[in-house]
Image 1 (tube, helix red, strand yellow):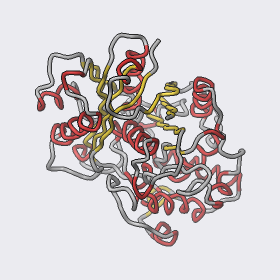
Image 2 (cartoon, helix red, strand yellow; image 1 turned 120 degrees about the vertical axis):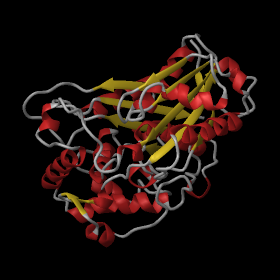
Image 3 (cartoon, rainbow, N blue to C red; image 1 turned 90 degrees about the vertical axis):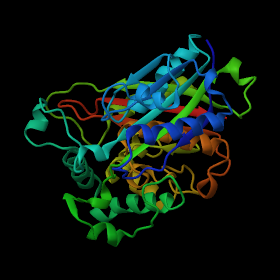
Length: 379
């Protein structure tokens, strides 16, 4: 079986672009990824595209604009894990010798939905009684705050950190720093959350070029190796479940670490699914970056900030960089590719050699999450 490497990465700035078509958002990113990899389009054996809210045949619609037709295209929908799922499918095809080089695209245009909370499945009984993602995460936040004696200002510190990092990222939807007071004074969403506790929706795309170990020998770009790619679905549980422990991520983290042959102490930089402020704190614990209940102390210590022991979401994360659902998983991978190549500019984590990305996807009644994709990378 072949080892798999990333040799090219690109993304658009995440933003609200109501006047741009899906194709207009996607095709420049595909060309930028090919250019970054110094690979001609004729070298691409297959394309994998992830999207959640952009309709059918997303990959073909973007590639048609470039004349990249008549090659295998696999489109993946797995909620917020769509892009990361497409990445895993590409890696498996290369690993098993089916192809040598693949383009992986993550993309979504959420302004087409008209704004507001992303819609759930109408036949889901929790959705029918009014549960939305902000409401679900607010329940998680309230329980975590009760058990570990936090208040809303403690959660706000996650948003402040996200914007401090995002201000350094030209691809982020927001490039402004904020204060705890500004978070508290923002428009209420679902107690204890205000608007700045929640990730913004928007439009965007990201792409990576992945290839086999054999192809790397002739590639012009320094490879970033895929040490582990892991995907899980949620475990159905009726009755009580502990909302302060993301079961699917705890389970997935254990499997990813075992695949990579490392532990949490070996991770130099991580991009995790901080759709809401409390989520980042839960994932500190799920990935073993601190003990149970120790997330706030880890945040306050500066360990998860740029320059700290384990910088988390130096891109600005979903909270500041934005969350065009299908694009998020690939944008995370692009970010850590630049980090491991030493090309992240003002937000560079000095000496980064091992990185982790994490996307959870979908709210379904009875599940912690519908899907969770975790990847580990090394130089």
